[in-house]
Image: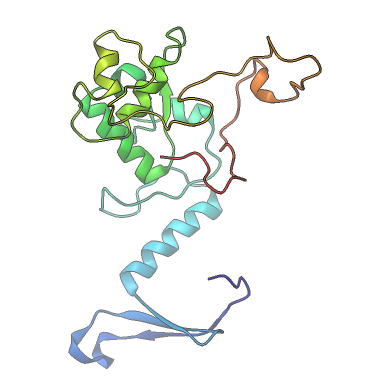
Length: 215
């Protein structure tokens, strides 16, 4: 809700024996803005488990039997991702990601955890590998000659296809580009960690934009 000051005025547990039509046990909540919400007991318990995990720093614990359940986490580090077990698949190698199995695992990790570490990404192919990675995670499910993923695996180093169906977003900078401190105009500032050689911690870029980068 737009108003962050809305509070719970009353919460009542409704037992199935007290309800019509044999409905499941639930909680009826009255809010300070006059609205009412009803949540099943099962949903409420699952939500409480998730939020408690955030307050205690739990990261990749399973909370329900559903493989499509989203996982709340905080405090993940690069070491956590690189050491993630095969059951969670928070880290995939670039060659593996370009396979059908790898694409499925990558999208599942991004859906459930909102994060994925891709290792072994090529750096000497003018950005074609990054473009292929973007193609693997977007576009149609069928990857044929209209896919940068397929053309890259065939040995081509295209950054975009004229009639392509996937790949990175086309922007005023192009599709894939790199930053470097060399060749900058005189007096241009390089006071940005992107120009350094140190690894960057986990972060999200350009969150101040109306349409920030995303999938």
